[in-house]
Each structure stands twice: as structure tokens, then as C-alpha cells.
Length: 460
Image 1 (spheres, one colour):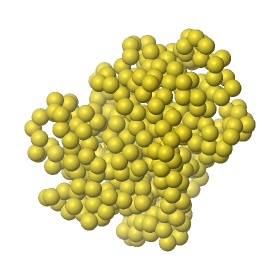
Image 2: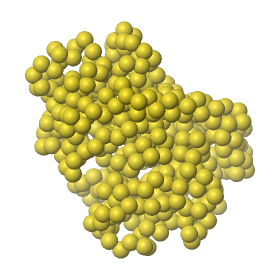
Image 3: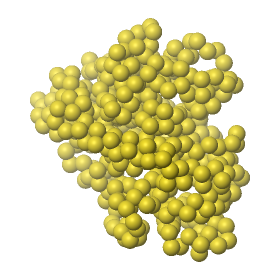
């Protein structure tokens, strides 16, 4: 029977987990990789020929989703419903293969609780974000024990070994309300990680040196030793299947490192008031820009994250202030909705990136050597901005008011600072050094290469 490693991803972290699967096969060709997931698309299957896919039934929850916290809770609850199907699938796989390890996404924590007592298979957690975020995860059970109130009702800083201090208002909303069931799901996941065979993290040592050191020295929890940790990043995606985009032709005609790229992820939706303010700030900055614009929300000036309150295609004339499109046509390019981010970040004309601070986007920018301006919107992104600015030193941050609104003047100032000032130059030098460090980490003898070898050895 052949040896196999089984991956169990959640939909939101699928791409980086598949990159991990490809790395396992590359480092150890005698081990096969099997991915168990709900209805994998034919596109995903054909793009990953070295991985065997086994579908699980697509399930839906009996209760309606009425808030962002409910949505995140469902990421745990669907795997919980699928546990019997997963168990049966693993039994079937074990008839023809020797399962050396099961690697689960942290949203699949219910599988750890269900399978630990039923199957004798080492279970590893996959943490799709970095070492700082994982350290917060490990610290959750301690935080839960030490603080009886919800973080949303406190004005404190969360102090975790090796991690920059995070103001409670910048902690992910899912960790801030003890009364919502999703809070306990995260605390329970933190507890189970200590019992796992190890945790695989999508980062590399020089990107987050203090957090990595604290984890390696196993001092992130006072009560229990940290589980084995493997820093195998950056698991950045290497190719995009989309055809050549017209924005890349425009970039070809721009001076080197002169263009600011603005993109806020698939859920990055702003109010029309905020979009106008951004446009005013951009126009006044005088900076060249490439902006992926989504249609605005229809419900006032609060922060992004709701996807059900907007039309699908943006009407640029109605979004922007009068005269903006004409006034910037010689130095700006607007893309409606989707843009080929990897190709843009790796284009020589791009010299800065305004990002929502999603971990995947941060890694892509680091690998491309592009300094960032962090404008977080939802989920763990405000926390990531703290790490981006304080720990990685690979970006600057925009300052919002108490309603998460950013003024045109503030945006203009930060854009100029990133693109045309000494502060931005220091960040640019740092990010270029990190780009080189990422290449070294992944090459033979580098920290990521060694971590992958140790991980595969631990499967044996």
C-alpha cells in the first residue's frame, strides 16, 4: 500500500493548502497527497494533477445566516455536519493507502474532536495566516481564562509573547463577543491545537522573526508546551489562468515603480461616500494609480464586508466626483471588479499596493517586493495591519476615524508618504530584502525547505 497524506481544507483557505500539497509531493515523491473536500470544481482538479480529490457531499445549515459572526460560525458547523462522511471516506482511503497524516484547516476543528478517539492517525492543523496570528490563536484559551468580559466592551491591549501589542478594537470581531457561539469555536480550536501532532504555518522565519522565535522557544502559553510548528511559507500562488488583461498593457507604458495599485479583495466593498473621498485623495496626491473598483454598498458610510448590499457592476461616472475620470486619465487606470493581482504586483511599473491586509495579499506583495499601505476592512485584517507595520515593517497604515471612515486628506498624505517620501523608501528597502529572503527560504538549505523536510519526516 502506498503512503498518503490527506488534506482537509475549508473553502476560503483552499488555494494555499493545495500549494502545501504540491510542496509535500515535490519534497517526497513517494508520498501521495489526497484532498477531501466538498464538490471540487473540474478547474481545481485539472490545475492540480499531482493531488487526488475525493468529494464530500455539499451540505447546508438548517439555521439562517443573519450576521458576519453567523457566517464565520458556519465555517465550523458545516465540517461538524460532515464528520460522519469524512470518517467513512478516511476508512475507504485506508483500505488502499497507508494514511500517514491528516492535515486539517483550523475551521475543520470539529474533525479533530470527532476523529481523535476513532482513528489512529496523526492530525496536524494548517494555519493559513502567519506566525503572529497563530500566536494569538494559541493564546486564546489563556485570554479566555484571564478576562471575563467581551473584548468589544474593553479598551485594552492584547499582549502575547513575541507579537506586537494589539489594541482590543483591532482584534478580529469573532474573538470580541463572548456571547456569540463563534467565540467558543475559536477558543476550543486553540485548545485542540496543543493536542495536535503539529501546526503548519504559511509564513517564513525572517518575515516574522519575533513571533517565530517565541513559537520555537515554545513560550506562547504558560500552561502547556507549544505543539511542533512548521513554517513552510510563503505558499504564494504561482500562476493565474486568466488571459492577458488590458491593464497590463497600460502598465507597460508607465515608468518603473511609479504606479500605486489599489485592491481590497473579493469582499472589499465601500460606501459611495468613501469611494469619492478615496478618489479626491488620489487625485490630489498626483500619484499614478491602477485601481480595482467594486460597486459601492448601498447602505451608508460604514466599513466594508457586506456583499449583499450592492449592484454587481460599478458605474464609474456615478461613483466618482465630477471631473475625476477626466482629470486623472493620463495617470490612472480603473479596472471594474476583478484584476490579475499576481501579474500586476510583479510588474516593474508597480511601486506600491493599497491592500485590505488579507494574508494571501500580504504574502503576494512581499514575494513581489512591493511595499504596502494597509487599509483593513473586516475579519482579522485590522490585526494583520498591526503585524504588517510593527513586526514585518513591510507597510504603512491608513488612520480611520471611530466609524472606520478615512478622509481624503488622510489618504492623500499616506499615499504620498508611501510613494514619494523617506518613510516609504525605508519600507521599500525592507520589502525588497524580504522578497530575497523568501526566495532563499524556499531554496535548498533555506528555512522553509528545512521545515518541509522536518514536516515530511514527522509523517513517517
